[in-house]
View 1 (spheres, helix red, strand yellow):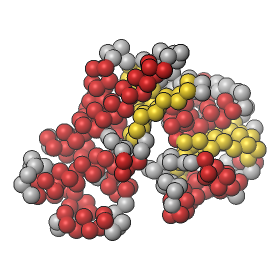
View 2: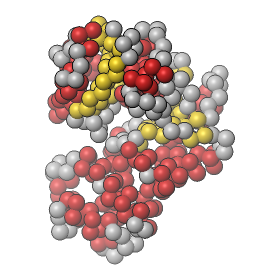
View 3: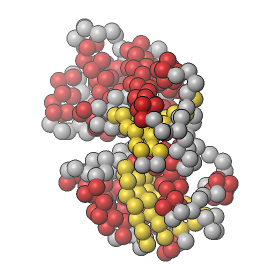
View 4: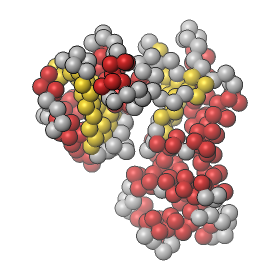
Length: 324
C-alpha cells in the first residue's frame, strides 16, 4: 500500500507517492499555495494541491492503493482541514488523511524522522521550530506583516528600501537601486509604491527580489551584503530562541543540532555563515547540519509514523535515486 506525502509551500507544491513494498517513489510538482484565511488564498491552495496531485497521478498507478496521506501546508488552520481533505479526495482515494502545518514535515525530512534538532525555515516566510513528544517550541512564523524576518520576502523588502534610500541620497550607493527598478519595470520608486499599495505587486514578487540581493552581494555590493548578513542574524535568533525555550522547559532531551531549510540558505557565504555565527555566540557546541531529505519526503516519514511503521532509509534512498 502506497504512502502519499504533500508539501504545500509558497514557492511550490510537491506531492510524493512511495510504496515501501515495491520500492517505488514518484515525485511531482505543482504551483504554490497561499495563506488559507482569504478566499483567493483558498482558491490558489486548491489549485496548487490538485495540480501537483494530477501531475503525480499522470506518472504512476500506485494511487489506486493509497493507504495514508500526510499533508504539510504552510499557514494552515484547524478549520481548513476538512476542506483540504476534500480537495485531495476529489483527485485520489485515500484511506486516511492527516493535515498539519509545514514545520512538522520540514523537521521530519531534515532529520529523517528523528526530530533530533531545531528546524529553521527560510523561504517565502521564516520560523524556528522543534517538537518532542507533546512539546512544541516555536519562534517566528507570524507572517510577512508581523514577522518573517530573514525570509526571502523580508530580504526583498529590505532591497526595495535600500533602493529608496539610495535614490534619495540618504543611504549607501547600491546596485539594488537600478536592478530593483528594472525588475519591476518602473522609472521611480513611486511607481513601485503605488503598485504595492494597490495590491498589484504580490508577496511572491517581492520575495523574488531576494535573487537580486544575492547576485549583488556576490558582486561586491555592501548594502546587499549587509541585508543578507542581517537576514542570517535574524534566522540565527529564531534558532537561539527555540534552543532557550527547550532549555527552560526542563525534562526535554538536550538538543545541539540546527537544521536550516529553505531557499534563502542557498546563500552560504552571507546568510548561512551569519546564522551560524549568531547561534555559536549563544552556544558554540551547537552543530549546523544539512537537511537529509526535503519536506515532501518528511511527509512520507510522518505518514508511516501515523501507521506505526518505520521507513527503511536504504530502500528509500534507492527508490529516490541515491543517498540524499
